[in-house]
Structures are given as structure tokens and as C-alpha cells.
Amino acid sequence: MSDESTELDVYLVGGAVRDALLDRPLGDRDWVVVGSTAAQMLSLGFTPVGKDFPVFLHPQTHEEYALARTERKQGRGHRGFVMHAEPSITLEQDLQRRDLTINAIAQDAKGTLIDPFGGAQDIEQGVLRHVSPAFAEDPLRVFRVARFAAQLPKFHVAPQTRALMREMAAAGELRDLSAERVWQELHKALTAPAPERFFSVLEEASCAQDWFAEIVVEALDFRAHEPLLRFAELPLGRDEFRAVAARLKTPSLYLLTALDWLAWGDTLGDWAGADAAVLNDAFAALKVTHGDVRLERMLRLLHGQGLDVSEQLLSLADGWRQVKVHANGLVGPAYGRALQVARIEFIESARGL
Image (cartoon, rainbow, N blue to C red):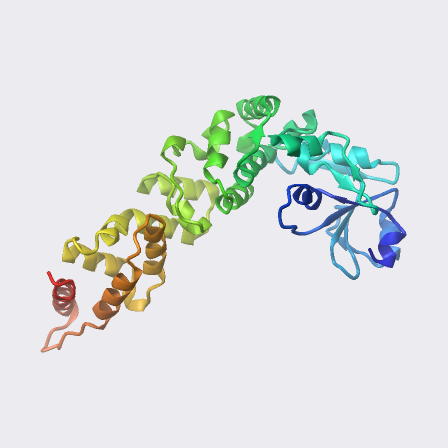
């Protein structure tokens, strides 16, 4: 810890402490400062983050140092909070405002754990448990619990926490969240070891209806590893994908990939036996004439299903792309039809059919 930090009563908190106890790779480190003021932080060279948020960046490490604070609910939704930070607020009061016990553990400069809510024991027992009734004040925490369940597949949600989540959903609190925040939690879950648990936890707590009503948990079968491709593997139809994507304001690439997979996944998976005209349509729709980016995404999805056809299809697509037709006076639609016929003939010939 640097000279600036040693003048403060500082504790490592949150994910860094949790992940160390879980023997997981450590990410960013966050610190809580007890008994200090914004003026003191500024005098030590820390840079404030935002106007009304008591968080500062360390002058050397640029890690975040937050003044111990409490929060009071005011209004609905994720942003309806008033924060209060002053030197009299204790470390335990700061930890009490956090979502889960496993995230409410601190560590002092000597490495001693401060764990007033039993987070270390919950880590040992594999439990996702809310810290206090204040959990219900932030509806985003429902999706955070589901996301942690996806990231920590051996953990289960405490019955009391599940009941509280159900009450929050029944009260309509989840509808007040922004699409962007819900999407962020889903995206993190799609990068996790067990993304299906995100949806199963929400369903078990009756929390899926407002945002994921179309998704049937029993039909989930993730085989890819990229979040983009896992989104495409959701068991949805074309209209359902459009509805979910619009509701969550997903990046357009996610919807495009999902629709490509719905339209052409089966054709490409059976490329050797597929009708040549349909395969030609697939190459055209995936804009193979402009490159293989969209086709390669389909190939990665097929690979996840155990179909390693990349070499054959990329070679076929390259040849298809190079097919030319002598104009012979053909222009406009007539030229397009002649090119289509030539490309279909090429596919049939290249496959030896």
C-alpha cells in the first residue's frame, strides 16, 4: 500500500476478498476508507469519481477508494437511492448495505478478515444469501443473484433469499429496472460456467416473467463458449428473439447472429446433403461475397454441437465467391439469375453430387 493509503483506515472489500477465498483469479481491487472525508482524500492526491459519489481514484494505482457510506431508498428502481458518507460511519455499516454475504467481507492491512455477516461460512457451504432486508430496496440484486449462480455453479440460493426475490417480483419492482442493467447481468451470465442457472434461478423465484417470459428453462442447451453465440443458442423463435432483443436493447450483432443461426444453422450443419439452391441462399444471406465473418460465427456454433465442418465449408464458400458469369449482354435481374444458376451448379459440382 502506498504512502497516501497508509494515512487512511483502509480495507480491501468485495469481489477481491471473495475471489481470494474461492481461489479464483483476482480482478480489480476495491477499497473502503473509514473515518475520512472527501477533503482529506483530495489533500492526499486522490481524484474524485463523479459529482455526488464518494469514490476516489488512487494517485498511483488508480484503484477505487470509497468512503464508508450508507444508502437510503428513495423512489423506485435501481437508481432510487440517497447515499450518506461521513467519518462516523463504521465498516460494518458500509458492509451491511451490500447485496450478498459473500460480497460483504473486508480485509485489513494485516490480512485479517472482518466478516460480520458470515460470508466466509457461506462460501464454505456454497450459499448465496442476502445480507439484510435492505436487499429488497434494489431490484437489480435479483439478477445479480442469478448471475452469481451462473458464475458459481456449486452454490445454491438460500430459501430466505429466494422468497425475498419472489416478493420483489410480485411487487413489480423488477419492471422498474433499465434494460441496459438487466442486459449487463445477462451478458455476464452468458460468459459464466453455467449460464443456464441464471434462468433457472429466476424461474424458481418467479422472477423471469417481466424480462425472460419466452425462455423455457428445460429447453436450454448451451454448447458454445462465447456470449454472442450462447445468446443465439437460446431456445427462441424468430419473433421471440426480436421481442427479447428489443426488450433488453441488446447489441444488434447479437440479434443478427441469432437470426442467422435460426435461418441457416441446419442447412450448414447438413451442408453435404442440403439442397444446393438452399445452400446458395445461405451463402448469399450470410454475405459470403463480402467475407466469411458471419459464416465463421455459424461454424463456431456448429463446432459446439460437435460438427467440425469449417475447412470444407470455408473452401466451398471461397469457390462460390469466385464464380463468374460472362455477361453476354445480360444485365440487371437477368445477370443475377444467371449468376445464381452458376453458383448452384458450382456447389453441386464441388460436392460431387
